[in-house]
Length: 255
Image (cartoon, rainbow, N blue to C red):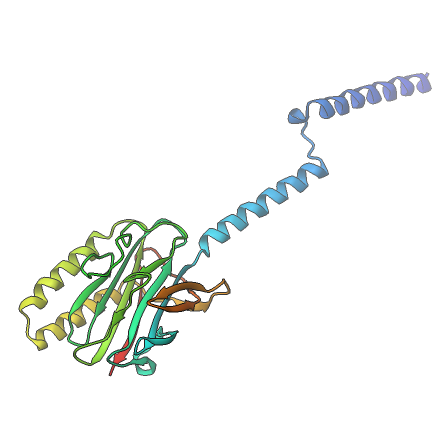
C-alpha cells in the first residue's frame, strides 16, 4: 500500500514540475527563476550603465593656449597656472586659444592685461578679425579658434603680468556678465591704482568659482590650420575636473 501511495505522490510531483518548467519555457515573464542567460544580460546592462555614467562624468573640456615667437614658427603652449614659473611672452609675439567642448555649453574667456584692463575674448565681436561663429552656446565637439582660425592676437603696449580666465557653464552666466559690465564701467574712469584694486577684486571673485583643474596631454590627432601662408598644427589638452561655472586661470609675463 505504501509503495502505491509513494508512486502516486512521485507521479504528481513530476507532473507539477513538468507543468512548471513548461510555463517557464513558454512564459518567461511569469517565471520566478532567473536563468544564467538572464543573469548575464542583467550584469552586462549594469556594466553598460556604469560605463556611460563614468564616461559622462569624465568628459573633458579640451583647450590649448598657444603663442608664436614674433608670429613665426610652430605654436607653443603657455598654460602654466603658476605665475612664478609662468611663461614669458614678448612684445610682437602672437597668441591664440583653441578649445573644443564635450557638450553644448556656454564658454566665457576674459583677459586682464598689464595695464589692468579687462577685455572679453569669447564670445565677442569687439575685434575686427574675430570669428562671427564665436558665440554662445558653443556646440558639442566643434573646434573654436579665438580670435579666429586664420588670425591671432598680437602683444603690444605696456608690459607686465597678464591673466586669462576661461569659465565653462551649462547655462548663461548672468552673474559673470554683470561682473564684467561693472568692471568695464569702473576701468573707464579709474586711475592705475584703482584699476589694480578692481583687478584684485575680479581675481578673488574668479578664484571663489573653483580652480582645481589640471591639464592632461591629449592623444588625438593635432588640429591643423593656416595663418597667411604658414601651415600650423597643435594638439589640444584635456582640462580635467572643470565643473559647471568653474574657472581655469592662466598667467604669463609680457616683456
